Amino acid sequence: KQEVTQIPAALSVPEGENLVLNCSFTDSAIYNLQWFRQDPGKGLTSLLLIQSSQREQTSGRLNASLDKSSGRSTLYIAASQPGDSATYLCAVGTGTGANNLFFGTGTRLTVIP
Amino acid sequence: SQTIHQWPATLVQPVGSPLSLECTVEGTSNPNLYWYRQAAGRGLQLLFYSVGIGQISSEVPQNLSASRPQDRQFILSSKKLLLSDSGFYLCAWGASGDTQYFGPGTRLTVL
Image 1 (cartoon, each protein chain N blue to C red):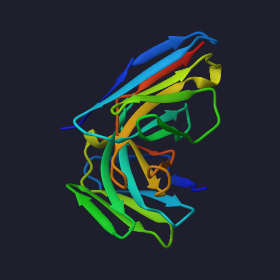
Image 2: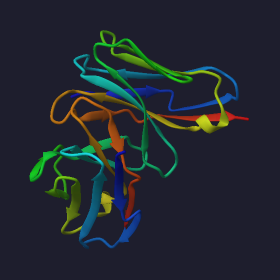
Image 3: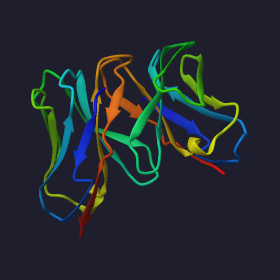
Image 4: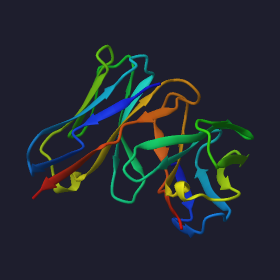
């Protein structure tokens, strides 16, 4: 069964700093990988989707990379802002079922003004 | 554009009472639909998914059931709630191999 781990569980950085969030998964036979953002008490907002054949995806200040063979993905956030404070979730799509997702437990990010 | 709705937003129910949570999607046809639960201190867990009307697959054995009576309607139910059913329930939709889009969630507290 796919296991997804996110380290660290929590991270505090000063505003303006660049940062990297890590995600690792145990089974490299993935279909795709998604990064989501969750604000307290809210649903998930999709940030980036990387297909298994891709190495990275970019959206604005966000860049996600995927190294399938080593079972790792990173989310890079440039020039962090207080509005980036949220929990970031990594989810691996296995391609089974309806491309069911396996989620990590997230990294809670706090950007200090 | 597509929109996903969930209701109610919050719910407090006694142990042993029934449950019905509803999810509807607008602006798309024949979506894959999903129910997830997020328990306190734990990651999101997929409970059910559906690839079409009347087609329900369960990922984990549990006290809950799901139904899809219409193409864009997904319902999560229980006949008798347990304390362990408390959590944040999220509905999502997606096309195969594509991004999943999540609803605003329902916070369920079973007392």
